Length: 460
Image 1 (cartoon, helix red, strand yellow):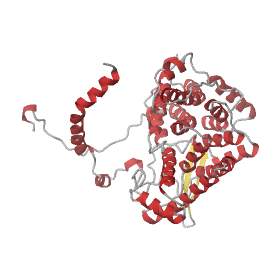
Image 2 (cartoon, helix red, strand yellow; image 1 turned 90 degrees about the horizontal axis):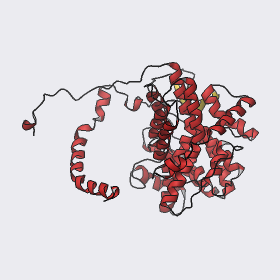
Image 3 (tube, rainbow, N blue to C red; image 1 turned 30 degrees about the vertical axis):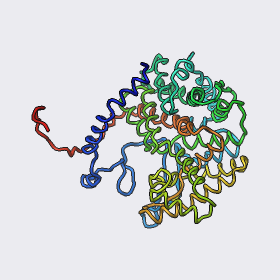
Image 4 (cartoon, rainbow, N blue to C red; image 1 turned 45 degrees about the vertical axis):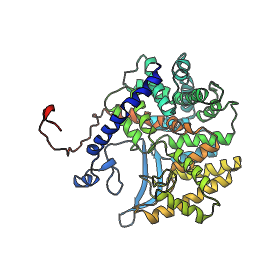
């Protein structure tokens, strides 16, 4: 009997008992939502108005979604995102105007707190190029021998395996963690693409190819170069992917995966364990997987709405909000954000990128459909839900469309998020270590009460 058959037999044997125990546990494990209000607990570390509970300080990035009006009261405003004090929109504009790839420069800014000189940037880019090399036989022994169905799972496993190849894996000095961070930033594109290629080779009819990166290319260019069997890509494709990487590199410090970085790093653990934990957070569909849900949602709309009139789209989106269609979650994916009010600045930039790419790919109708759905969905959500701030599309709304137009496998959407966000995680890990903070240990209120022990032969 092989292991797969053994596991299947165990599942059949214990299925009924596990189902019974799950139901029993479910009765006692769920907390009554009203108790959070009773004990004044900020569930999800957010208050009733959606404001985040302040639990740290950072110099790395800042989100602005409200400004004070003439009366000194908070008023919703167009969203702004700053990296080390620089408006991300200005950074992107600067790269576009000079037709330069900007992810490497953005990573430098996040890590070191200043914009690099031309010489600084060259040294930094050369270092990343040198660090892209994976350990000898790593692709064969780690990636090829045990491919996973989920690329985020595979990426986390690759990161944890890299621990074994690092002679100073446990050292948490700033210089050593910086060296580890640079290696991970450089290697994430290869780990992601090679893992996906291995999965496709073993589970589909695709041929296997492992392209080595080109040292003369940027991170965005190399991603497309090693992804495609013919290594071909257009300048616009690479520029748009570069902008996606810039916009996903960091987001305010309070997002779930970056908070995970701070929590785990505060314990004094190694870099590989910290990054694997953050990858586990990003893997969750409520965090990194939303852009995939947007693309799936549009597939569903195109399958079920005949004639994309505003009326037909509106009727179907109402059914979506009423949990009647698609995944019946009651959500219109890619709409709204926990922090932003009137707009998500990343979405505004990606919308322009998507429009340009759609023109090159003859997919203008697809882009226009997205734009119309965003408008109608925003109006519907504002009408039907009690919203204390504006409702607008977020970064996931157009990033999924862009990845679709780049013909990227959907299994890569969330890993590409990680390829970018590793820069932000690294900056926050370094900040946590350098600041010498205490271990992060929040407080929970126990509501179970105290019970008297009952001997086993007296229990029901």
